[in-house]
Image (cartoon, rainbow, N blue to C red; front, side, top):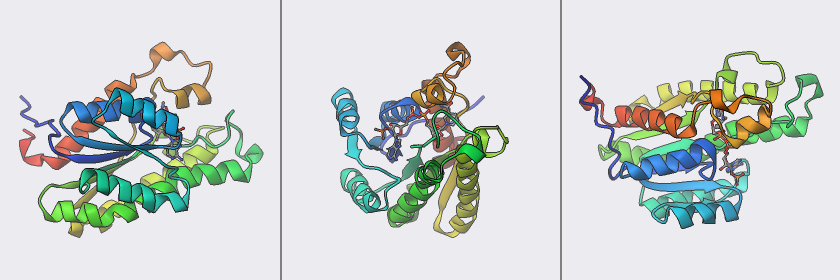
Length: 236
Ligand SMILES: NC(=O)c1ccc[n+]([C@@H]2O[C@H](COP(=O)([O-])OP(=O)(O)OC[C@H]3O[C@@H](n4cnc5c(N)ncnc54)[C@H](OP(=O)(O)O)[C@@H]3O)[C@@H](O)[C@H]2O)c1
C-alpha cells in the first residue's frame, strides 16, 4: 500500500505557459494541493483571466523566448513567492503551423521553437538557480521539471523543429540533473503524453479528441512526481 505524501502544502512553484492546456491544469492542481503558485504566459488578457478565476495564483505576463523578459519574469516569481522550490518549464512552441517537413521549415520558425523550448527554460532556470539552491540548502527541496514529449525520441515526420528542440531540452535536463547533484537540485524531463489541448489541436486538427488524455490527468501525474521527489521518505 502506498503512503506517498502527495500534498504540496507551502511549496513555492512557478509554471510557464499557465493559461492553457497542461499549464493551466497544473496551476489548478498545485493550488489545490496547497502550493503557492506563480505562472507566466505572453498574453496579458489570458493571464488576467486566470487570476480572476484563481485569485490565489500570481500571474506574470512575459515571453520566455525573449532574453530581455527572463530576468523580469524571474524577479516577479521570487518577489511574489518569496523564493522558489519548484520550476515547471511548460510553455512550448510547435515551430511551423501547419507542421512542415524540415526541408520546408523556415529558419525563423525553427529559431522560435528553439528559443521557446530550449533557450527559454535554460535562461529561466539559470536566473532562478540561486533561489532553487537556497531552497535545497534550507531543506525544502528544489525541483525543475522540463516538460518534454515523445517527439524528443521518435523521428515523427513534420515534427522536426519541435522534436529537435524537445530532444535538446531532454538532454539538457539530464546533464543539469547530474551537474546539480551537489546543490541538491533535481531536474526532471517529463513527457505528459498526448493531451486534448490547443497545442495538440494546432498540430493535429483531425485527431480524435476522445482518444486524448485530459490535461487535468497529466497535471495530477506530474504533481505526484514532484511530490515524490520532494518527499522521498513518504514513498513505500
Ligand atoms: N498537448 C500534447 O499532446 C502534448 C504532448 C506532449 C508534450 N506536450 C507538452 O506539454 C506542454 C504544454 O502543452 P499544451 O498542449 O498544454 O500547450 P497549450 O495548450 O498550447 O498552452 C501553451 C501555454 O504556453 C503559453 N506560451 C506559449 N509560448 C510562450 C512563451 N514564449 N512564453 C510564455 N508563455 C508561452 C501559452 O500562453 P500565451 O500564448 O498567452 O503565451 C499557453 O499558456 C508543452 O511543453 C508541450 O510541448 C504536449
